[in-house]
Amino acid sequence: MTSISELTFFGTPVVHLKEINSTNEYLKNVTNHTPMLVIADYQTKGRGQYGKVWESVTKQNLTFSFQWYPCSLKVEEGYKIAQLVSLVILETINHFIDPNRASIKWPNDIIIMNKKVCGLLIEPSIQNNLIQKVVVGIGLNVHQTKFPENMPNASSLSSLFPNRTWAINVILEKMITFFEMQLPILQNINTRLFFNSNLYKINEVITIKKENEILPCINLGVDEEGFWVLKNLSNNDILTIASSQGIEYVY
Ligand code: BTN
Image (cartoon, rainbow, N blue to C red; front, side, top):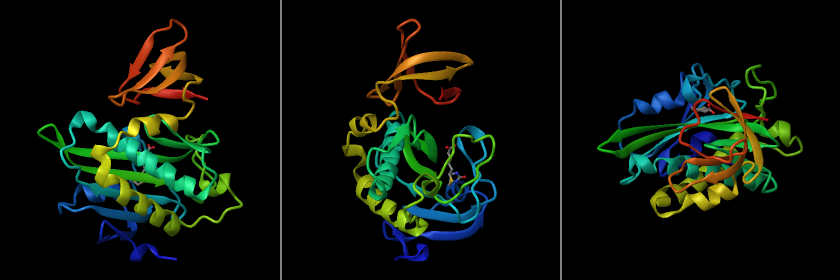
């Protein structure tokens, strides 16, 4: 079994820190132009999407980030990063459990048995309408059993699959293997088909809360521009959603 400190990411040794404010923050201040991955046992200021806090008990979960320099990826194609990264996480989880149990809740949460086990924080740096560098932060809950009250939907791999052995270094090693295969071909693959076929509740009736309005909709999946398309069942309008900010699933 390879320990975390023996792992590499595209040939660069993985940086393993005991404690840091946030692994995303760490990499945003790194200026070397190479792929790099940093993992922390504990983050004192772990960040979630839209300024939320991401809390994770020491050594219980995978909390890491990597930096990637995509080649000529336009800002409007940035959604491909979220799609590919979610698919790699799904592929990794599927390596350890029966496939088809995990799915992606748009834009990039990983859901198993209606519970969120993983979230992503993707922070691109843009120059001349191109994504010059992207920092991808991944929080995958592995062993944690208790979650804050404001996260009633959170769970972890070992809570959902208690009969399996889950090891953080083994999961990370597998995920790195998949990233090393997929990231270099990001521009050449059409992630949309795979993404939609793994989308949580695709073609099903779901209820979302949008700007305090409760909307029963059919989830039609993502379009060619990465937008989420829904059919509003109260008036049959097609909704095209660009950002998940202000959108909530009503379970
Ligand atoms: C979310 O679902 O809100 C995104 C959560 C992302 C959490 C990860 S943990 C590693 C990396 N460092 C951070 O501060 N956040 C991301």
